Length: 266
Image (cartoon, rainbow, N blue to C red; front, side, top):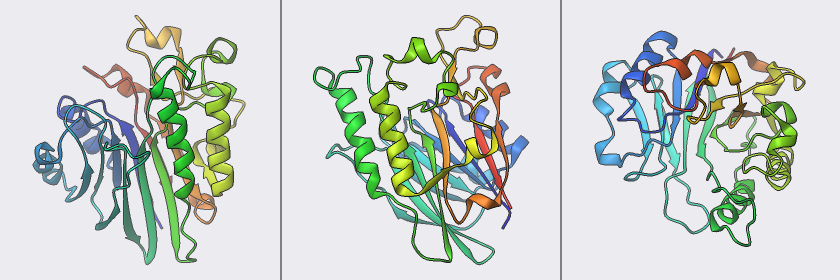
């Protein structure tokens, strides 16, 4: 079942539309999941994607903040746009595709960043993030034998020591604190998810998908974090052929601080 899925926090789909078009033309994924689109649904650039052959689009957006979109050149149906923590924002959309007679359920997530202070008692944004991860336990791989499940997105947590440039220096920095990394590990393990990126790249190796805009020369300092993830149900994991983290996109003109991650299944 050949299937190429990409995920990318684009940090404004309208501002960076030329970058997304370039990516689709050069890499031609079957499905692209975008996060932080920062675009209300009625202003999403549907025509630009349809012109490139991506006719199937499901969006969950809002003005100025958050937002997710799943764009496919394969037929795709909407499953749901789930809300979390009783807050009206746009952080999830799930769709289903038929790939050679097999259903693939695809969840596209944008987990809250959590602010700067890693204390839920004084930082409501961090409390929101921890609660959001806890509610994600309700999203599990489908149980049907003919259905595989994929979960992708900006989960805003770098779980392994090798998912950050310095484990010791980032232990008290939001995205790599123990309460976050343990929460994400618990979510993955209890849900029966497989981390496809670390199935392909050994856990001993550094692996980043995000570099701060604050770095004067991000490539030389390489102070990155792996905030973007691709997980799969156990029945799909053996089909993984390749993972690519497109570091070069961080050098494109007016880039996102995240780069695309591509999984090829076959």
